Image 1 (cartoon, helix red, strand yellow):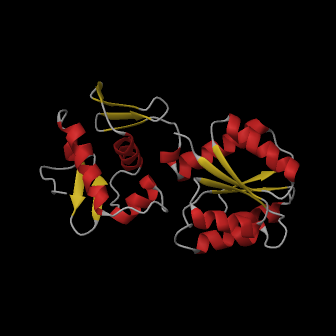
Image 2 (cartoon, helix red, strand yellow):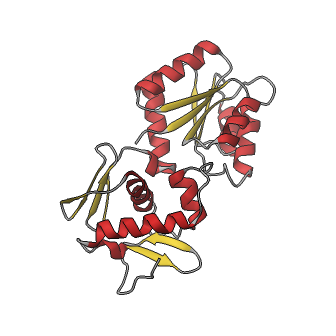
Image 3 (cartoon, one colour):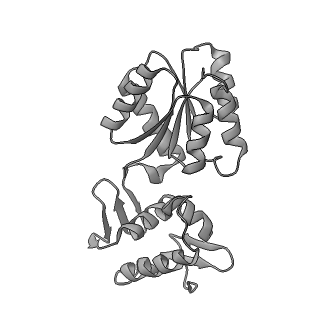
Length: 236
């Protein structure tokens, strides 16, 4: 599954290099050359990761990282700081405000891609191409295939994204609003009951193999995928 990365870098040559490197690696890239531009883009849609330069005109990368971590809507976005400042205290300062990793210029493209993959695997596993397997279900984002006990299943694109998110976040209850944000996108304006429709479609696709029981309704809270669902399942 392609991931969207926001590159916040004020030097045009470095910004272009980063964009080309990330695009070749299969990522979708959006670019900002200062903090205010970055915040406007973040208000429009949330990326899967922010690659944030420390030294920016106006508001610094540290200030941007601190703001992202204090706001509920952006708190979970992975952040990698990118800077020429290599002192240990500078690295500590970046990590203390909430950065997930710290890459010092100059850097190799291979190192950067490896760092991004590692952070996404840790903080946003649903945004990677790594297969996931739970309770006899196997989902491969790279090939867009799902199997139940080694038998292929046909899922629509929304049901695939929904199952991918649930499988990467098992046992956690997700409200309809949270699922809309993480599966549909936080600026896609559809009714919360739309989630119920796609949950029913997903359960229907899983019913033949008996895996529909893994998708649980938590009344008054939302939905979860449980690898130990027990004998009962709520009706959603």
